[in-house]
Length: 287
Image (cartoon, rainbow, N blue to C red; front, side):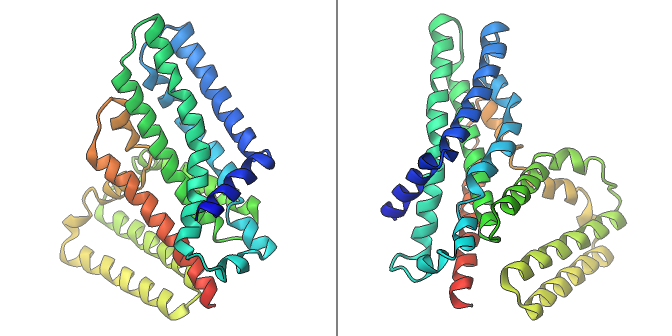
């Protein structure tokens, strides 16, 4: 795993992707820090991070798009499948390389609140809580982008799909506020969600019987809930949106609140998508 970690981390800097990623990240955050905290004399550093959370959506696909898609395109994934190292260690090595690259930028950002404290007032606890939440949010999106990269051979497709998925999670809460909330509409929406899940399952497994089973069972369950206990649909869409909205969990950290629930949520997202990535690669091994 260590060899894979070093190889991937070195590849990001020899190909300039890592340098470009860090440059974009630090330049944008630096501009906001200067304008918001120094020029406007706002002592709350979380305001700066809140203003650039959308930055994550733009730059994470830059570093995740090649991590597995390039292996698939060059057919070097066959070497990974036959290597003595377990698939889990391979995925973890690649993921840790991405986290290290992202973490380098976050370590540099940690100096900003200290600078504010030296020349004025700053709540360091709230500032570093915001940085921790920002890092966890980025780590979650990296895991998502890595899984998407494992599904295709094209870096461009991986980047575009990652961007779409990430922006969808970003606007999830606002989007659900525009949806109807009556039980019939929620039933229809849940049916669409089941169809999407079935399509994803088919994309991963390519087994018609399993996909059909998931679709039929899911649609039947939605129908049973509607006719037996329709009140279960009350507020269901908002609850689902809250679970999928990665950005919403960051708000507690930006307020200086070390919410264990949010911490567990981010760790769970990371674990789930790394697990799905491992399962995707293992499926190719046995195909």
